[in-house]
Length: 117
View 1 (cartoon, rainbow, N blue to C red):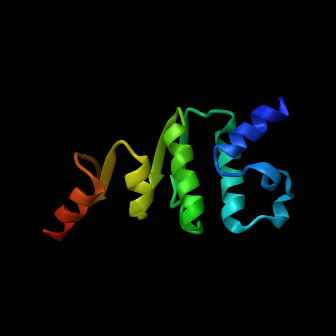
View 2: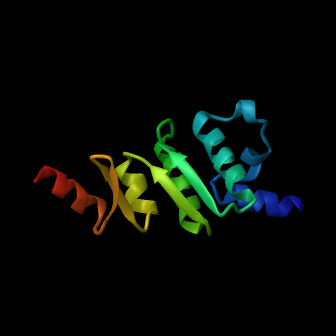
View 3: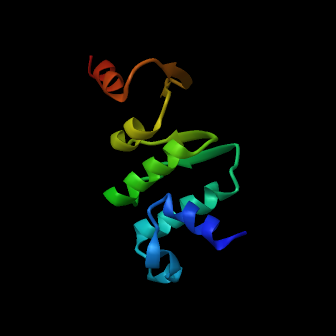
């Protein structure tokens, strides 16, 4: 694989320049997460399952994750309570309630309003 292609993919997750050349043990937790997401998506799987992917990420890493998910060409099934991540990266919301999973037509804000009423 050409190094330029590898670095370009890594760069799409915000790991660019000299940062991309550093050993993993020198990276912050958020930077390590970015590298992990880049690795997961590099071979272009058809679907990615993410369970609370932003739980240990700083805001910059969440932004990088959102950018990566937006350009990702496959399907993503994500469980998250992170409103910013959800609002910035998903096309369709599904709600889990009383043992059932159903599509929710509306935004995350609409869902919050429904829960409050």
